[in-house]
Image 1 (cartoon, rainbow, N blue to C red):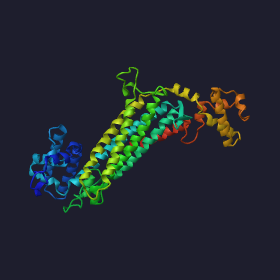
Image 2: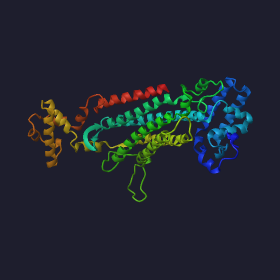
Image 3: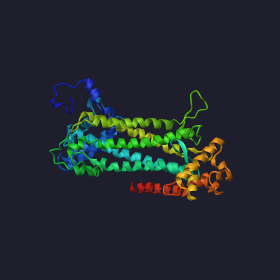
Image 4: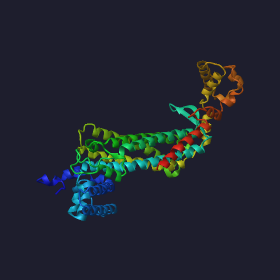
Length: 462
């Protein structure tokens, strides 16, 4: 007989049991379910809703059940549907019928909402720490490459030279925003729904704040209907996770490009690449490619959750059982990717000479020639047109700007003097961008200091 089966005259269909049971995946919540139950029974005791002796016996039994589940000794079955019913059944087997008093003043509806919030609170903390590890790895590469000049791109066309360290710092600030979003989301995750009951609260004189404090929540969900039907916190996590996955995917795309023979800007360590079963010369950036591919998986869970929730009336509906697998998988997917990323970045070889060679064989310093003429008093639109003519002439004659003689420069404008050869050097071009947030070395050093300060502040808050 089901624990809820008092009003039923026959058992549920076995196929229905198999189809509707969630124990296959929600057993991940076992420790959180028992953590919540321990706080709940402590409150029932403090409020004198159940006798102290019964409460103590239940608490001891819950600890035993937890150990048996963690050791694999306990059998979790589809017959008992979900983690809540399985834990309660195991508890009753351990302490007798007194275990049935545990569910006093609560429902599986507020219980599962509690478990998910506890799980997600820990998951977010793990992702934040992994993101910080990736930031530190990027900063390490930035520090090591404060003099490494590379082509910067727009439209995947060479645009202007930048420092490789500057490029790495762009991703640091992306991931810092991710950390900020996750941190901010915790204030919405960290509220206790327990005590909302099935949807309307309970007739027992419970103390919801007592339970919230015991579980480290900042407060309680203010409305019982909202408490059991709210999955905004799951959607928000999946949305934040999608942004993280997108940022990882963009960096992966750069790694895939840069490690190709066509770019040859970096080489990923052997421990983060694979070979070909047919072509012995191949070294494939499989980690970067797979992380890029799994971004679609994360996006899919976000869209799935939004679609599941869009037509649901208040309060709880069985559809909401679909809220867990996507959340679990998104966390595991991100955790796996981020754990690989920090060491992959740290061990990456940066080919400084190849990058420098690239910026000497292009026209990414053309803007500096235009700016040079503007500083000499020429209107920018006129200087833009003249530099375009200079570039066209170079292309027609198989030259780059620094290949021209002073006389050739002067044939386009008498304003150009011998100092142009220093102005157009890649190092000069980079360090001329000496504005806040620019690619000049000292500005990149400031960015590194700013990013590290944020990381250290987060460490202090822990």
